Amino acid sequence: MNIVGEVLTTAIPGSVALLYPSLGELISERSGVTNLGTEGAMLAGALSGVAVTIATGNPWLGVLASLVAGAACGALHAGAVVWRRANQLASGLVVWFLALGVTSVLGSPLNGQVIDPLPAVRIPGLADIPGVGPALFDQNPLVYLAYVAVPALWFFITYTRPGLTLRATGERPAVVFASGSHPSVIRFAAVTVGSALAGLGGAQLSIGIVGNWSDDMTNGYGFVAVAVVIFARWSPIGVLIGSYLFGAALAVSSVVQANGIAVNQYLLDALPYAITIVVLVIVSGFGRSNAPESQRDALSETQ
Image (tube, rainbow, N blue to C red; front, side):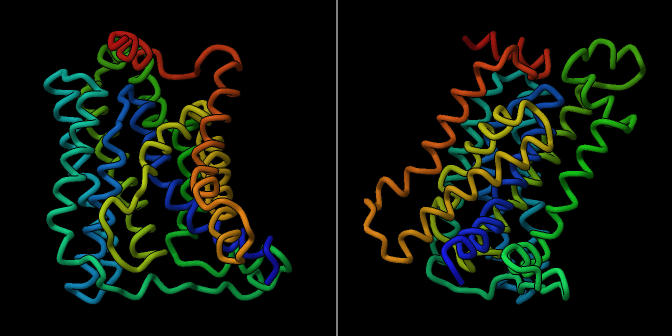
């Protein structure tokens, strides 16, 4: 396999580990709540997935545990922000610090324990397409689920009544309340579901790719997910592009190191995050923000 093929094969699963929390953050922000606790939800999901897989021998129970752990972090953040009117940014950071500490303590006995990652499922015919076939169609089921998740979320937000209510909650919560719905309930549900997806991203990282647990293994993916949503201008298709752009940059870094090409390792490690910053700077100059209006108002209060 040439270097391009190696980059594609490495980029796809890594991109999916970022795509899930980015989609979750999109749902949360569409309802009007920023969730900086996404990183914490990913950590909780990564640890829970490995722990339950080791305990039961069933990686799919591990995936389920990751969803539950991520949702618990989201419910904690949503409870503080929606019901107690806490500052969104401060609450998200508290959830992250809490998850970082708890996973470091509870995950300490699991450091170094190896599990079998989710098995790849090869799709006959499609996997034989030259160049892209093995990278796209010889992956674990969470990768295939991600292929469906983006168009499904786009359709939900754009064409369904619950999706319209979600968007209206982020734009005009008073109108949503007048129509008979409860913005607080919608926001609580959106943040909880979004964090469950972040937990699924943690599962993809620990169970789907690495096959073990290590402290702070998400390495800032949750914060990058927030940046990806801004880059995407709150669009599911844009989130897809941003996630795969970051995943490709991360893959280039690892493949270059694996092939012994003489490039400074620290520069390679910084490459994906540098690209994220550059893209955000460029995108920020493209007109007004597409962020939900109630969220812009909430964030402006923190400045």
